[in-house]
Image (cartoon, rainbow, N blue to C red; front, side):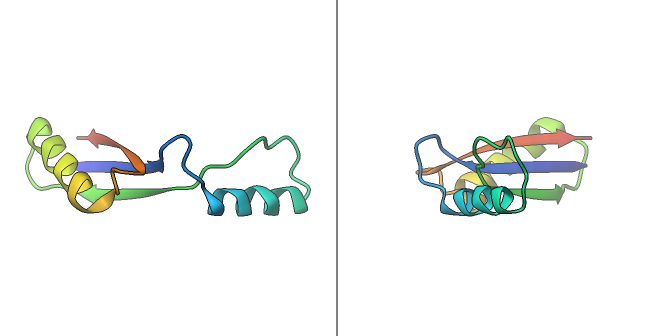
Length: 80
């Protein structure tokens, strides 16, 4: 089973990498970009076919390792 965990900074948390990307886009002539927020994506393969168990396992992994839940949010998507 394949899954994706997407980690992003919470609203209000300073994102210096996002600001740097925003500035670089402007310097490259990419117009119309209002703001950029940078994040992380983890593509993970899970053994078994129990979607609920896989989701619980990934939430535990995100809480314990993949995301700093003080400053980051995460979203778990299981795509059987």
